[in-house]
Amino acid sequence: MLANDPVTQARIDLVTALRAAVRHGLNEGVCNHFSMTVPDREDLFLVNPQGLHWSEIMPADLVVADGDGNIIEGKYPVEPTAFFIHARLHAGNARAKVVLHTHMPYATALTSIRDGRLEMCTQNAFRYWNRIAYDEAYAGVALSAEEGDRMCRAMGDKDILFLRNHGVIVSGPTVAQAYDDLYYLERAAMVQVLAMQTGRPLHNIDAALAEHTANQIAGEAQQAFLHFESLKRLLDKDEPGWRKLAA
Image 1 (cartoon, rainbow, N blue to C red):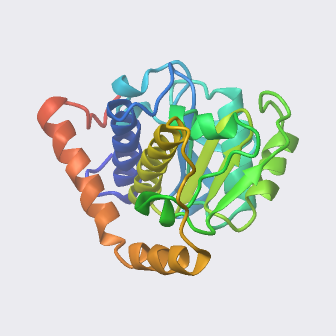
Image 2 (image 1 turned 30 degrees about the vertical axis):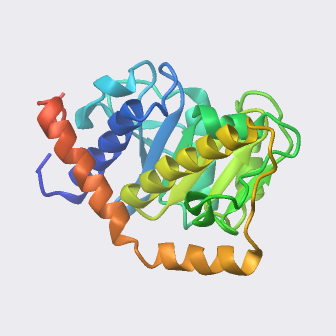
């Protein structure tokens, strides 16, 4: 793999997100999964392998799979739920170049309460105005293409899907943008859960102001890329060798 090759860069970006998620407390054991379509090969996607902790994954460890569940490149298997969720979302949603699925605690806490929603009560939450879909039909562990297709339909034209009693899915055009959304989604959920614990009512803003603020934040997309590059610098400093490209 060449360092400046688009596929190599995609591998590095996806591993950046996986390792950063550990630092931010968004991972869970060796479960959950991040994926992205292979540059110039929309029929293939990169995904973290089954059985490796996110903190130990290197670019060479990522697996390339196709929509039929075949391993095209890589020495590890893919967790079945990773395949059924990610393959179907990539196939069914052309906008979802990157798909990040976690059971991160605070956002998942909102999926576990009756009528749980991300409320428009903090500036971090406003960026998600009209971008979240809510899947209310938990159907067990996602072990079929039909379940992945159902999640894809539930997400519709939104970027984010809250899975009732399960977790969240965040999609985006690049790893940097999707990871930035994942990170701030958990921060917004955390503050909301803390505020709810006071027993006092949340102070939501009106729809017009939420939409206005969301548009302001969307206009500062460079922040996502700056954030992501800073995460790479931290990894370079603290975890030398994480960019390993050869198996």
